[in-house]
Length: 104
Image (cartoon, rainbow, N blue to C red):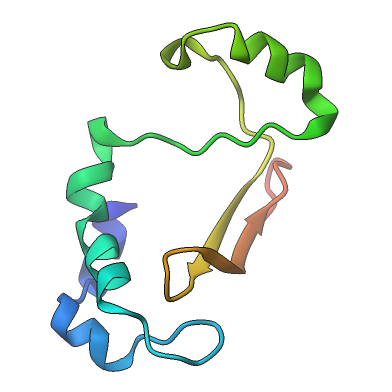
């Protein structure tokens, strides 16, 4: 994914000129810097996924809380890509995968 999106990469200076948040306001410099640093700081061997365990999976949450974080086993049942807002918070769903084979 990093290689596929590399041609669309902007410098923070370029991005500040036109990137807007979902509400139409300008993206702040701190968030642009965080996005700019994401790949070198948080991709590849540094990637740490956000794991969300829904309330309906309380038994899995209990088992997970009893294990060291680096030993939790799980499988994805869906994924989403969000547009971030001015403060780096996910504000608008851009793409959602339901987990179905062949779903787009």
